[in-house]
Length: 368
Image (cartoon, rainbow, N blue to C red; front, side, top):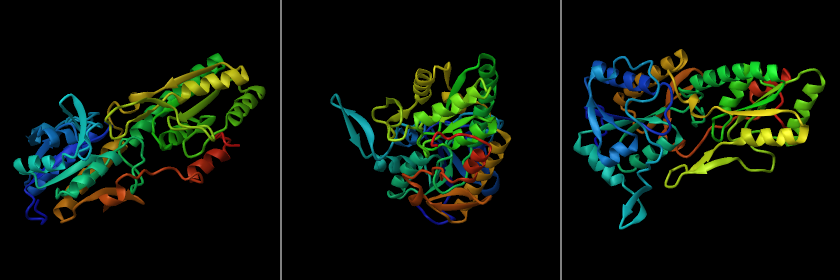
């Protein structure tokens, strides 16, 4: 793979991991900037790393990315089960894990790809870092609704997910009030509580439970009972899917065989509803928002952020930067080495200013 700025004539573009609002905005920005500003050819790599592994790629034209700014999902497709370093192959009736990075390099070379822009989260960046070792230049663009990608203060998709979760919490608030119930709403986030914290604060939730602050059941129950005794006949609890009781484990809904990240969290809201109702005798209901947080058109913030990221990725690549991730720090765009991002996540400092603000207005985090 060539390294100099002049050598780049064709770039590949792929979206990896879970889908998220704003992916198409990045694809549009990358493709149009590449064609319009730098006269490059752009090759779509379909379904994440699977497209590289199986050689499913096609040249993108200007019209292919027109009118996709507002669309959710990704026109390129995605996959969170393909890791080129650990790819399951069926041989003589047995599943064998193989390193297929050389195959990816060969497939990329055969279609003339000089560098790849990978849009994804920590799993995608880890996969990209593995292919960098084999000589494919990459530029990463941070994507995840979980906002947990190390190195950047924000990822596109997060804002839309928070807006969606907040809207759901607002609606749950009215039914909780009408029926005098404890309503527990579970949001996504994996091992980080960013969505729960922001949506919980925005909706005025009475309790917010996040992975970074293990809760005790007695503290949670004390909070809802006190509210009930003081005339507040309902309570709203926002809980991150990765929240856990102090000394306990996260709630796992299932495990996916041969996935780079086999654990799927989920079900903590159901567990909490059962435990709280059993201990307090207060009527509880659970709501798991699930994949609705990934869907729909991106918010205005995510559209502009995604467009900025896509444009900046091309400009940095053409300026000679390689194997880096586009990030935003203190409101400004920059890049960090992919090697520093791989296999890392960004969690919430328990002393985060938003947590302090929430505590100041009486929000309980289940730890006191």
